[in-house]
Each structure stands twice: as C-alpha cells, then as structure tokens.
Amino acid sequence: NNLPLTRSLFDIPHRIVAYLSYKFAYGGDNGFATTVSLRYEGRSGRTFSYVYNGDQANLGGLFGEPVNHALFFVPRDRSQVSMSDAAWNAMNTFITNDPVLSQYRGQFVPRNAGREPWVNELDLSVIQDIPTGVGRIQLTANIFNVLNLLNPSWGYIQFVTRPSQGDFSGQTRYGIAKFNCYEMDGRMRLDFQTPQGNSVFVRDNLLSRWQMQIGVRYIF
Image 1 (tube, rainbow, N blue to C red):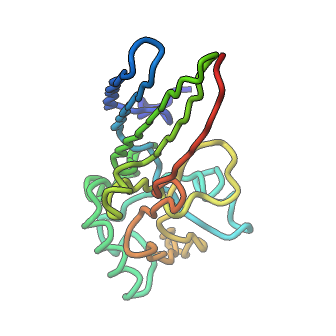
Image 2: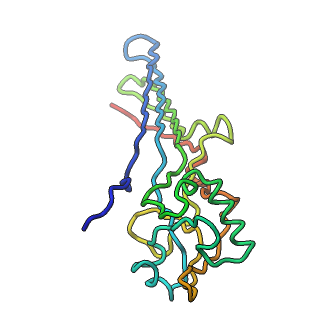
C-alpha cells in the first residue's frame, strides 16, 4: 500500500472558542442573582470528496471500485468525455467557477479536497436565582444560535447537498456527474447533475434556526 497523503476526514484546521460569563448578585448574602453567559465557536467546515454518481448496475465498474467512491477526474476539455453540448457547457461552467475543481483540470481531485462553509455558533444562557429561605429556585433560559435570532440571514449551517448513495462509511462525498458507461474509444459517458440552487451546499433547516430551552429547578 502506497496511498498518497491527503486531508483527514476529521480535519478542522481552524477553530476559535470564546466564553464570557458574568454574575449580577443583589439583595445581600443569599439574595437574588442573575448570571449571563455567552459562548462562541467558529470553525472550518467539514471536508468532502468530489466523486461520480451512477446506477446500481454500474457501481462496480469504475476504476475498480464503486462509482460513488471513485474520485472525480476533471476533464481538461470536452475531448476527454462523452456528453451532450448542453451538459458539457453546464459542467464546464461549474468546474470553472468552483475554486477546488478549477485547480485540477486534467487530473483527479484529491480525496477530501472540498470543504463545507465556515461555521459560526453563538449561544446565550441566562440563569436567575431566587432565594426561598431554605434554598433557592433557579430559572434557566438557553438560546442556541443567537445569530439567527438577531438576523434571519445569519447563523446558517450548510452541508453538501448530494452525499453519495448507499454510503455508510461516515465520509462525505458530492456526486458531480452520473457515470453511464464507457464509449468504444475509452471516454466516459457522463450526465452532468445541476446542483440544487446552483450550489454544492444546502442549508440545514433545523440547525440553522435559533432555538430556546427553558428550565426550572429547586436547590436546597
């Protein structure tokens, strides 16, 4: 085995974590208190690989491995693939505009060469202590993804739109084109699959929304 050195599946090259908390005490000893905390985490997105998609009948017929595991070869020009005019023009434009694919004309894209967008997470916690004489009641409110609460266009978490089919390895892959078969001259016959919204990424509708969790407990 002589595998080339590539990015790890869990590669997170940049990560920033900040925590700020302050407790406001009032009402004397064992009195009322309000604690406000903010937590921020900014980190690089997950890595992913550019691969092919294909029918189940073809899953064992590309580079000796399943089609949806095979790293994508970026055509230098149309002469290296068999496609319709419309499909080639669409894929060629997509490759040219993609900051990763455009670097690998005439080459295979390395494993995990792609990366999902940067993630910003800001959470707010408020704790209110109320004395009762023999203990205290504690009210809590936690707001997750405060950025989205402040502005509906902030706090988005995005991921790859088309993970490979039937893959349970935990690796993230994006299928660029559908592999159909080989032509007699050895060229691959491909169908370009236009990305949803012309983007490789899609917003996570749950994690991109702000959420609130409230609680109460009695401490004695």
